[in-house]
Amino acid sequence: MMRRAKISIIGAGNVGATTAHWCAAAELGDIVLLDIPQTEDMPKGKALDLMQSSPIMGFDSTVTGTNDYADTKDSDVVVITAGLPRKPGMSRDDLLATNAKIVSSVAEQVAKYSPNCVIIVVSNPLDAMVQQAMKVTGFPPARVLGQAGVLDTARYRTFLAMELGVSVEDVSALLMGGHGDTMVPMPTCTSVGGIPIRRLLSQDKLDAIVDRARKGGAEIVGLLKTGSAYYAPAAATAQMVEAIIKDKKRLIPCAAYCDKEYGVGGYYVGVPVVLGSGGVQKIVELELDDQEKADFQNSVDAVKELVAAMTKLLEG
Ligand SMILES: NC(=O)c1ccc[n+]([C@@H]2O[C@H](COP(=O)([O-])OP(=O)(O)OC[C@H]3O[C@@H](n4cnc5c(N)ncnc54)[C@H](O)[C@@H]3O)[C@@H](O)[C@H]2O)c1
Ligand SMILES: O=C(O)C[C@H](O)C(=O)O
Image (cartoon, rainbow, N blue to C red; front, side, top):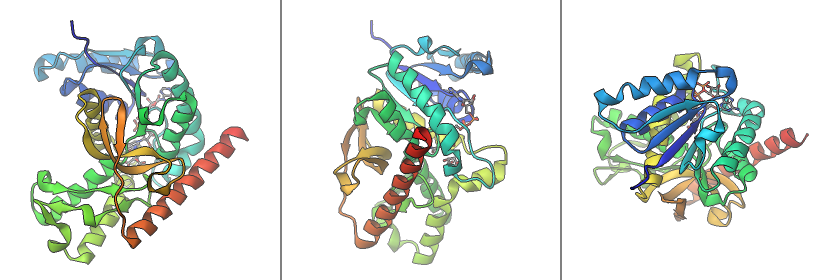
C-alpha cells in the first residue's frame, strides 16, 4: 500500500495552522500540528476543527494536534513556524534573540525524530533562523531551506497585477536576497503575459511597487496590530511543501545555502532554486547586472551581520 506523505508543522499559531489548512485542502499528505506543552490542547483543537472541514472540502488528509515530538516521527517534510511574530514598531531582526533559542530547540527535536526530512523554516528573522536550523540539525544544506521569496514575489506580483488591471496568473517575477528591507527585486526577470515589465510600466511606477513589496510585511503588521501576516505566508509555504512532496521541480525563490553560488560564502539567502524531492535540487545562477550585483551584495552583507549577531547572542 502506498504511504501518504507525512508533514509536521511545528508552531500551531497563525502561520502554522494556516499552513496546515492549505496543505490539507490540497491533500498533500497527513499533517501533524505541534505546539509547546504550555498551549495544552490548542493544537488538538485546531487539528480537530480542520478535520471536521474535510467532509465539506472533500479531502482525506488526517490532521493531528500534539505537544509530543514522538508524533512527528519519520516526517517527510517539517515546517518550522515556532517563534514570536513582530508587532508594530518592530523589525524582524528584533525577534533574533528569542526566536534563535526557540528554533534551536525545535531543530534539535526535528533532527532526532525525523532524520531524513526536508525542513522548511518560516520563523523570523528568516535568513538567520534557517542558518541556525542547518547548524543544529547537521543536515545537508539541500534539506534545510527557508520560505521568504515565494511570499515576497507573490506580494510584488499582486501589486503589479493591481496596477496593470490584469490577472495575477499572467504576472511572472523574481525577487532575490534576504527577507528584509534589503531584498532585491529583479525587473529584468519580471514579465506580464511574456511582455517585459519595462515595456508596460514607467520606472517611477515600478519603483513604487518594488518599494511596497519590500515593505509588504510591515504594511500588514501595521494593519493587524497584533502580529504579522499569515494567509499569504502559509500559502507560500504550502507551495514549497507541494513542490517537495510531488517532486514538482518548481523554479521558485527560496532561502537556500549559497557557498560558491553567487560568491556568497556559506550563508542562506534568497535565490532561484529548483525545488523537488529531497529539497533544493539546484541553485540557478543568473548573470546579474551591475545594479543587481550591488543590491544583492548589500543584502548578503545584512544577512551576514545578522548571523554574526545571532552567533554572539547564542555563544555569549
Ligand atoms: N518567513 C516568512 O515569510 C514569515 C511570514 C510570516 C511570519 N513569519 C514568522 O513566523 C513566526 C510565526 O508567526 P505566527 O504569526 O504564526 O506567530 P504566532 O504567535 O501566531 O504562532 C507562533 C507559535 O509558535 C509557538 N511556539 C513558541 N515556542 C515554541 C517552541 N519552542 N516549540 C513549538 N512551538 C513554539 C507558540 O506557542 C505559537 O503558537 C514568526 O517568527 C513570524 O515572524 C515568517
Ligand atoms: O513581516 C513580518 O514580520 C512577517 C513576515 O516576514 C512577512 O513578510 O509577512
